[in-house]
Length: 386
Image 1 (tube, one colour):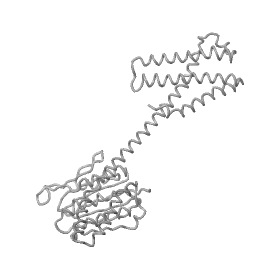
Image 2 (image 1 turned 180 degrees about the horizontal axis):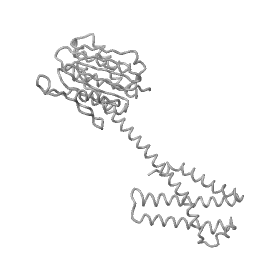
Image 3 (image 1 turned 120 degrees about the horizontal axis):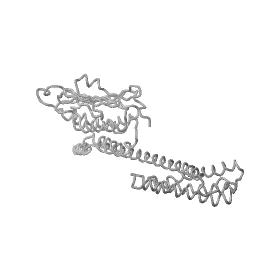
Image 4 (image 1 turned 90 degrees about the horizontal axis):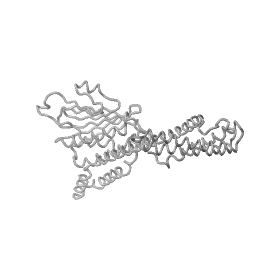
């Protein structure tokens, strides 16, 4: 439960307020400030003892987390004991030394008014214990939120680590080959690789970055990949000025570009192409990536917050599950030329989907469409100010 140190400030304020009430409220009625001061000290002290016994001995040990045998008897015994303790101080100290006039109403120790004293004391005790459990509930919620946040951060870091592909190893080999032939592109390639590593290590730690920086990172990645594909690769990137001022999560677009190379360009024996368009739709950034692929006939739709059920149903596909799993619609028939075809995409797109669910809940839309000779990915995300 809630540690004492996290509750002591609330406890101090509560009992100080109760002491002042006992002292001043009674003093206003009979103008006996000194006598009521000592009375308030005694009543407050007894109430603190009753609250502590009720909370830490009765409730936390016998009722929570589950009720133990005899718990109600322990509660009743504690109420009787604390009530008698208050009555002893009231009858033998307060009434006889500070307020002797009260003895005319309390002629016997076992006066029926003892029930009223017990009711008032345990009303105060109940409020005090309620504050404890409210504070404990708030602390538990805070810890739960921190754990959820830490878990989300850990998941994001894991997904980011998956974004750092083995292409770095391949790129170093390619640069090594260039250096052996004393290719003049070698210094530029080393500089671009250095920029990529710097971005991965430092800039990717920010929550959001300008979209222009992410585009620069993607361009460096593409230039490094061009070493492998030389003249058979045609890449076109169109960035509209309206996207200036937009911010995105770092390393969000790279998996889409990686997917173009891994499942598109790499599978093309002839000339391959990639088209990337970035535009604005109100407060939404729209990213369209299309690449050439070997002939396929697969339709995949992965919906985010805004959904695209209509497009899926129009294609005669299945429906997305309640858990947000990606939709996969396969065209009827055995595939192209009578052969079954594999689905485009892979770890990269799953990475994007999971990161979108964490970073842009209810603020993203991600759809992919695989056709016979091309693969299209459309991502819409809402702008997030830094």
